[in-house]
Image (cartoon, rainbow, N blue to C red; front, side):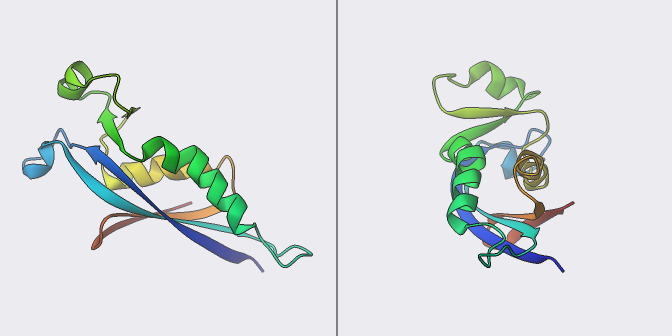
Length: 132
């Protein structure tokens, strides 16, 4: 029987949605809440993974890269051409929706962890779940 462990993280990031017909076409930011859920068998010490190790892996590979950055869709000619490259940013191959970001996070972490699920809140009331 597998057991699941989760840890919650927070980061702030700006983005815009190029296709959006409303206010999200404008550059804006969110305080994201990220929950990473991993699974496994409990080892001889009673752990699946040390919470400190999980924290370090997610911070190094996700949070540190995204926090206080701007997410830019590679086909967004406005930001790609005008955004100061000296400012912290990340370029994505898809629109920077919560759905696409949760998949991107999952795909990065699945190489490092036995990940079951990523939950990403864009606001306190808007959340996406990406599951393998």
